[in-house]
View 1: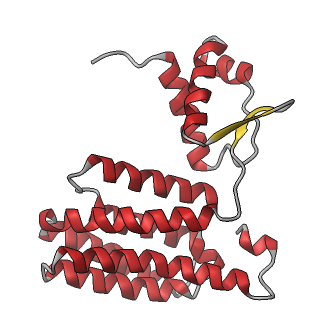
View 2: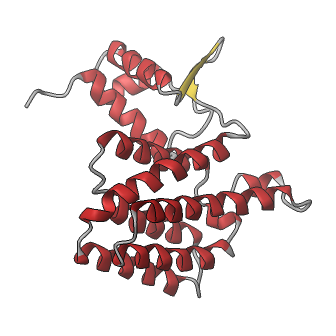
Length: 225
């Protein structure tokens, strides 16, 4: 197995910190401190940042330099719409290969989500939500679609720590929709039914967020929650 290049090491470090939110939108990426931390020259760090720029995660501003890309007002909507399509497809493609054990695991996670509703923590609920969906889409045989799903979830973490913190009432509906998706999978329903159910499930959260943003009392601080 070939050793990881310095550029790849720098890329992975910066990408992980962007995905985790440690480097948030607008964070300046100064070459020298990153290079010193990794005990390398600035050249591979510069290469890593150029790669991130090609992925639209980093921008260059005159007199500022490299920084984590700022969020556009429509970025959340576009990301959710794209994720609905690719995650729906990935779930449908995974459906024929899902075992009884995997469906049992997903059901157990959804029950934990249901139990958490009484003392609701949106961040914890969101982590369980990802765990639930990961069981259902991770066996997707198409690696390109699966990569797009992973990118969508990573982008969502950058854009909004938890949609459920903004529309907590959506959590109850989400758990019920999970029940329906699980039933379709257990019944070996046609792939198109599974895909549409997974897609509409994702879009329902988007629509709830957009409706809340349009309400007069929805402040800018709420929108960024």
